[in-house]
Image (cartoon, rainbow over all chains, first blue to last red; front, side, top):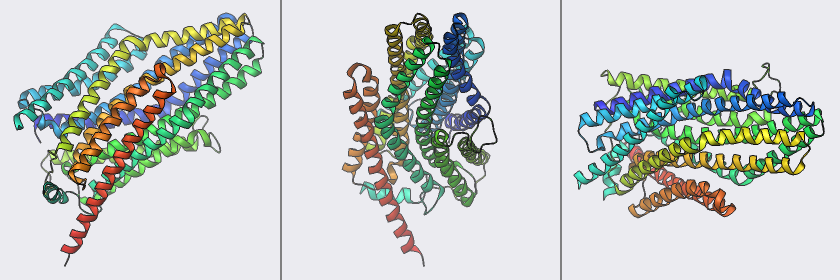
Length: 165
Length: 368
C-alpha cells in the first residue's frame, strides 16, 4: 500500500468512525429534543392564532424556521461525513489505478481528505454563525476541493486505462 | 479460461466462513433488503403520507381560524405522528443500505487488517448484526413509541437502534485497530494474495461509479447554491402566509398556502433523493467492481448485470428528479430503475453463491 492509499484508507476509517460517533451523540442527546422543539414551535404558531395572539404566532414560525435550519444541517453533516469517508476508503483501495505520479496522487489524496473533513465542518458551523461568510466559505471550498479532486481522479482512471492499453 | 484463472487467484482470499465472505454476503443482502424496503416505501407509503400531512396541516389552519385550540393541538399531534412514520422509514432504508455499503467496504480492506482470523470473523459478525438491528430499531420507533420507557423522550426501539449503532462503531474501531497494526508491520497470518479485477465488468463498474458520484456532487453543489436557502426562505414564507390567511378566515388562502407547502416539500424531497441516490449507486458500483472476481458467472452474464446495474443507477435518480415535471409516470420509471439495480445485485449475489459452492467443494476435496 503506497502513501496516497494510506492517507485515504486511514483518513476514511477515522472520518467514518468520527461521523458515526457524532451521529450516536446526536441521536442520544440532540435529535429527539430538536424534533420536539420544531414540532412544538409549529403547533404553537397555530395555537397562538386560535388565541388571537398574532405577533406570537409569527414569532413561533420564525423559531420553527430557525430550528429546522439547524436540524437540516446537523443531519446533513452526519450523512456527508460517513458518505465521504466511504468514498475515501474505496478510492484508497484502487488509488494505484489513478494514472498520475505518486506525488500527484498524494496531493490528490490530501485534497480529498481535507475537503471531506472541511465541507461538512463548514456546514455544521453554519448552525452557530447562521450563514457567516467564513463558514460558508469553508463549506463551499471543501465541497469544491472534493469535486475537483474527484474529477481529477476520474481523469486519472482514464489515463491508467490508456497507459495499460 | 479467464474465469478459471480469476477463480484460482481469488479463492485464497475467500476461505469458508471467513470475515471477507461474511461481509460480502451480509453487505449485498443488506443492500438488497434496504432497496426493496425503499421501493415498497416509495410505492405504498411516501405519496399517501405526504397527502395526509397536507390535509392535516389544512385542518390545523381551519381549527386555528375557528379559534379551536384543542383542534390545533390534535392536528399537530397527527402531523408529528405522520412525520415520524415517514422519517423512520426513510432512515431505516438509508441505514440498511449504508450498512451494506460499509460491509462491502470492510470486505475490501480485510487483507490489511492485522488481526487473528477468529477476531476478524467476530468483528464481521458484530458489524452485520449491527447493520440488521440498527434499521430494525429505527423502523420500530414509530410503532413502539414511549411504551414502558423509563426515559422522557427515548423509547425502547431507539435504545435498540442506538445500541446497534454502538455495535457498528465498535466493529469499525476494531477494524481500524487492525489496519493500524498492519501499517506498523504486524502480520497475524500469511498475507493473502490480493486479487485485482481488471476485467471488463470491473473496469466499467469502477469508471461508471466514479462518473455517477461526480454527477451527484455537481448536482448537490448546484442544489446548495441555488435552491437550499431559497427553499428554506419559501417554507417560512408559506407558513407565515398560512397563519395570516387563517387569521382572516380565508379558506381559499389557506388551501392555496397548504398546496404551496406540499409542492415545496415535494421539490425538496425529489432533489435530495436524486442527489443521495446517484452518489450511493455510484459508490455501490465502485464497490461491486471489487467483488467481480468472486462472481462466478460467464463473462456475458457478468456484463449483462453490470449494464443493468449502471442503467438502473442512472434511471432511478434521473426520473426521481423529473417526478415534479412528468408526474407519476416518472415515479413509475424511477421504481423500475430501482428494481433493475435490485435484480442486478441479486444476479451478482447468485454468482458469488456459485463461487463459494465451488470453492468449498474444492476445499473439501483437498482435505485428507
